[in-house]
Image (cartoon, rainbow, N blue to C red; front, side):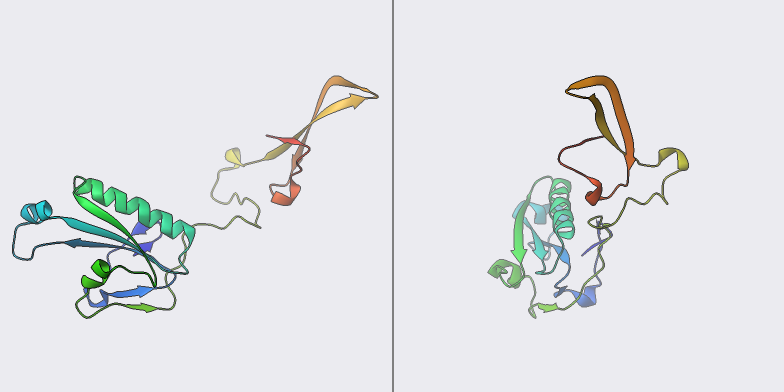
Length: 166
């Protein structure tokens, strides 16, 4: 399961239980009685399972971590993308008693900046982010050598397509 931008091992008692708002990485290594090195020669399957209500961020982290896991396995794994409701037969075969999908999931660790200003509580007073609007001073029909720089609020609504910003 992906929680706080990192994969987290789930309890063995909850194997096969997925939540709609989460993304999961499922690793299956074939062969039961052999040593790990021998199993790896036979193959590993890395499934990235994406719940229908999983955020883009969780989906991206799961995909990235799946590739990293495959690198740790020396690129011997086969990567599979599984979407809720469209799981492959191979994925389903990894769960002897089947799997189930439940409502809910973990909270998203990513901040949503869509309608909120940039907060500075985590930044020292010397690193406060500022947004400056740059305007050329004009006199009549000609532009002078002067430039106006105005501090604007760091909101999306403060931006204009006709201005330049720093």
